[in-house]
Length: 244
Image 1 (cartoon, helix red, strand yellow):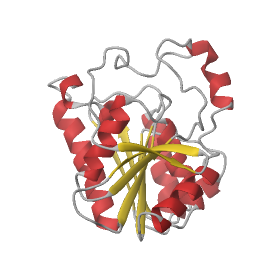
Image 2 (image 1 turned 45 degrees about the vertical axis):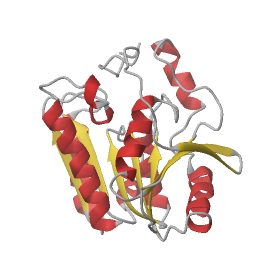
Image 3 (image 1 turned 180 degrees about the vertical axis):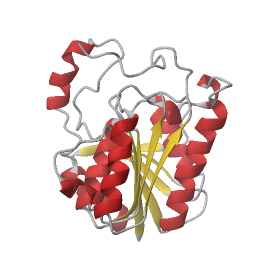
Image 4 (image 1 turned 120 degrees about the vertical axis):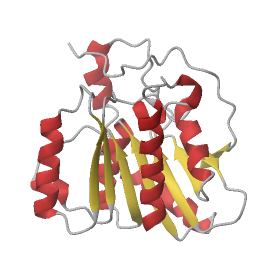
């Protein structure tokens, strides 16, 4: 029996009016938000288990776009049902088998091609949350076209030492009170990166924060968490600005 890893209530969410629009790219739907001026810089946002339509993720897309990036969140679930807060946790492992965050390469390529050919993007970064954080870790090992990555509380998969030879600068963000990722795992990640990683990387743990903390919209934040949420988002944007 797996505990519900989302300590914030995903059911009680304020409505969010999006700033971007939806597009069809080959077989993928995607949500895109562009900055008010033209740019050749872009960021791909990889959603969590709640999918590309979840209001919190669209808020993040709009936020990154406001910093001057063409920002896109494709449906990495390819039209299949995302996980819902009403689903039963015992079914989660089976759901995950059909939604493998390590199998995102084809979708990433489709979106990279679109950003380069249709949007004129020259430098492209990637940011992912939870399920998407795992996908970012994978992509930063496999896809040299992604000039920087930010992985937010993606569970750490330890299948081989190849998981630490990142191709480009990657920043790992964790919450101290995330009961899906132990501090031991984070320390191990740090050790292994020291050993194997040849590019800039950073790991940061935010005090008192639970899984999913960084994507809350302002009206859904608790006052005591707000400074850490805002710091994590600033850090995420700073990393992108440094390398993309």
